[in-house]
Length: 630
Image 1 (tube, rainbow, N blue to C red):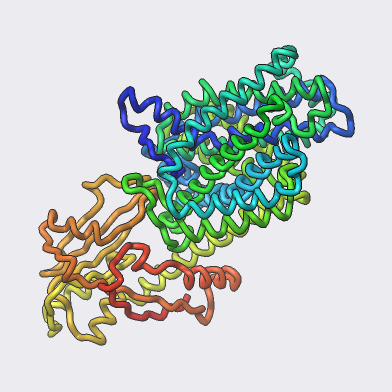
Image 2: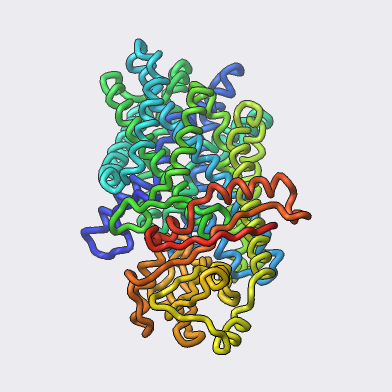
């Protein structure tokens, strides 16, 4: 997501083609590389029962209609209409659904659905690089069988290199992503056409009757196959998540004009090849390619899978920042790798965690076939969560009738649930991996959110109301000294503890005092004229409220430099930032279960300091210790 270097929102004929190419490189990398393994994994279930025309045409029909219903109708035509001020993704949809809901209980339920979907997205982000790179490099087993033993080491090298370059930013690399994916889609479509030309009857699988026939003839096995068919639509969430970078129109046009036709042709071409030679099931994607071109195709596929992995990794960075801004994850280091693109970010903690997890998966599962059993359950879980949130938005914001909402989204929820249920059969074989990642992240997010709520309540209980402090100030004998003191506070109606400690120990108050509160709102970005709100509370004392959207990274010094526009003199070289360093300890009677409190304390102790997160110059910071029991 963060690799977009082309601003598709800029109008102009010369940029439209560039926008479409950028969409292909960033949005469609994941779903575009699904032909490497999806059809093979689906037909593998019939290997011991025999693979005939019914099985081939039935599975092809399932894949085609999964692409049409889940991707085209649900995401491209429906869900992408629900943008949060141009931003997409499950957390943006969650914020939009909460905004149109009144009841606190409903808002809490919607928040839970959103963070469950976000947690499952991270689980998907662990598996995508592993299965994509493995499936690409495994082409060596077809084009150069002597190199079979080098598949795993080469995969490890590619994955390590992929995560190492994240710190350098992906802006320059992003320029080649689009053209590579254009070549990829054109080639896989062309190879599919060559096979279809020899066996054109496979095009009959466009009819849903073949999928229905397979389900009627062997309903249980067909249900199991659905768990692999869903591999063909992995990456559908990226269409919606990347809408904020490119806009809806380029994403829709690229899907309908190139991606969907190319994927369909390649899947049907693989089906034609398998029908003619069942032994081709060993690796139908590469056997579809003419022998002299297979090694080159392995190289191209490796590039394509790196691109697919890049989009997921960048998406994880953006999602992590959104979770931080919405209060579901502790502060982490967020580095901007682009000079002009706000979306180009690098989160070292997320990058390192993903790298370790992906390498573990590669060496634990050893092949894309084995890893396919772990893939799908996280994707379908996210689909289901998105469907629930979209139902609320279309009912409340778009004013759909109850009958229309239930009929349309009820159908998709049933479809998503069937896909999810089919994938639960793979839990023992490896599906537990994304579930474990998702459950662990859900526990972390809910523990952090609840802990912050309790911490804020304790601060309010122990703090002095600001109105009382200001009322006593004229009668006090507090000495005012030169300079500007900046105090950060989570609640603008109470005196910051750091200010009280400064008065207690130093017995002085600066001639200019700024009480700064950072508010994170449920919108992607805040307009410049709404960024700052300044109120004079007393002579030389101002309340400053700074607002940030959930796709923005805070930079307090930069905002404070604009106070001159509000009539408040501010010299950054004369300013000192007073921060409270909290030492959080368990209360005598904890208000959280012991395990959740332990998680919160661990995250709090390892969170990035406010100095680094808010980009405050470290040489202008004064920290005052505060002990808080929750």
